[in-house]
Image 1 (tube, one colour):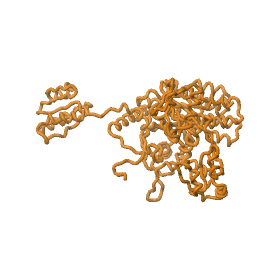
Image 2 (cartoon, rainbow over the protein chains, first blue to last red):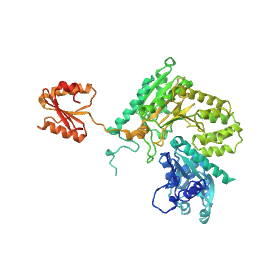
Image 3 (cartoon, each protein chain N blue to C red):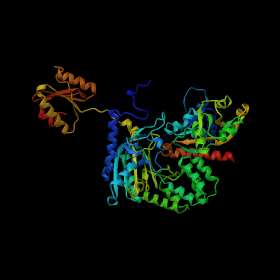
Image 4 (tube, chains in turn orange, blue):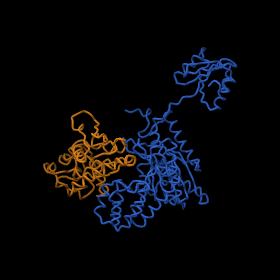
Amino acid sequence: MNHLTLALAKGRLAIQTMELFESIGITCQEMKSKSRKLIFESEERKYRFFLSKASDVPTYVEYGAADIGVAGADTLSEENRSLYEALDLGFGKCKMVVAGLPTSLERLNRGNDIRVTTKYPNIASRYFYQKRRQTVEIIKLNGSVELGAIVGLSDVIVDLVETGDTLKANGLVVLDEICDISARLVVNRVSMKMKYEQVIDLIKRLEERIYDKSI
Amino acid sequence: MRDNKLHTPDGFRDYLPRDYKFKLDIQSKIESVFNSHGYVPVSSPMLEYMEVFENKGSIPPTQMYRMFDREGDILTLRSDMTPPIARIAATNFSSDDFPLRFRYTENSFRCHESYKGKAGEFTETGVELIGASNVEADAEVIALAVKCLLAAGLSDFRVYIEHPGLISGALTESGLTRSDQTAAMNFLSDRNIAAAGKFLSTKTLGTDLRKLTGRLNSLTGGRALLDEMRGLSLGETAANVLEELARTNEILEDYGLSEYIRFDLGLSGHLDYYTGMVFRGYALGVGFSLLDGGRYDNLLPHYGMNACAVGFAVKIDNLVSILQKEAQPIVCDALIGYSAYVRKFALDAADELRRQGLIIENGLLIGNKTDGLNEHLSLARRKGIPGVIYFEGENSVRICDLVHNTSKTITIAELLRGDAL
């Protein structure tokens, strides 16, 4: 029987994913050890895991290099790859928001002459062009996006907010909510068909587990 | 700086002899399947007026290569073969010619974002069956899809049939508001099963429809799934769709091909020109489908012909990348060499061998060296050619077998009788 190969977004999401997998009996001790290996096999050898940068997970899955991926809805929406989004895993919850100094609310609502800094240019442009019908200037940054608004590079930022502490500490406020974010399980289009039994078995077990927990 | 004269543009590639021959062989295997079912070849220009591709559900203009002609009309490199074939059918044929069966092998072009590894140019071998609207026509074309993947040498593959009408029909007749229907269908056409399921779980739906929407991930299967679904009451449209799919499946059973067929009832398909069932071929080894097709009854009317149609295209490059391991190096059967004064005998004899089906290369070494035979042997060794035929005199031919390391001298008559090879 073929392995199922899973790409996980490095970091907290991967840890939470493995906790969920352990709770349905899929364990992978290898992954917890501090080895330099890049690919790990689960104990019953039906699953292989690898960790990658979050934004690369959709790419691996689209090309079929991984059958299944776990990544945040933010990454999936930004990358906009052709995949099955099969399951909302329910953790990694946060919101995609527009934020800025309290004074920039008026500017946001007034017109087109707005500068936006973000790590998510595609999400930001869809939001501004399609939902708000505003023509804006989007500048992509690669980290600490809040700085953009604080030092005056931009009027507002589009970013993920979990607790809001970073915003608050820097005098920024949420001006509008774009969408809810959580971890999603995505499946390659061919794997969904050609490894159907294995994929659907995993999805069903996860689904039951998530459903149990939420009661 | 990149020296552009040494490179192909991003998304474009060369095919070198071994892979290209392999690709052509696959194409011709598939074409001969189409040919034997009465499909006749057509060809359309690589450049078309933009308007040809401006129909409902065509790919976005940003993905088309566009340019102007001298009159200022917008031209485009064709991005898909179905619209040009529909144009050809509508402007050159009439319903007296129905059913029309066309086949083609052409390259199409799409302009993708950089660094996404998507091909800008791709080859499709496909068919369009125009002017037949029944399930027999659907089944014929789906059967062809299976037969051509078998002919190409694949065995572990599936052709999945989807039908957007099932879920959209069931939702329309369920009493959901129009905007809720649209929202659910948009999730499904984005393949966002999680969001569609979650969204629908908050709505009031009938018990039977809930059975369908509660398992959107696993609405995949064969005849048993169709029978199970037919037992639910999902409204008239859905019942008709299921009836149609069941009949298609029955015909495919008669074709003896139903083992390769599966249904996926949970998807609404892409929002494109397809109006009925849609099917795609999948195999492990490449992350994308190998063939796409379906019924498109609204496309020909767009070009002024009142006709239904169904068709599909095999994405040859994807198929090649799955089967590529099997590509063999190309080597001719033998090299000929000769002294100048026996050239005529040698050339005549070589042509006769070619008529017998052998591939014979001319050594081209004549006149440069006096020691002809050894030169030819070393050339053949260097290129991995298994045999050398060296014409020493008017009726004396030296045959060297480089695989078994043997050689002998025979007459031309013996050579042409095939005794020696």
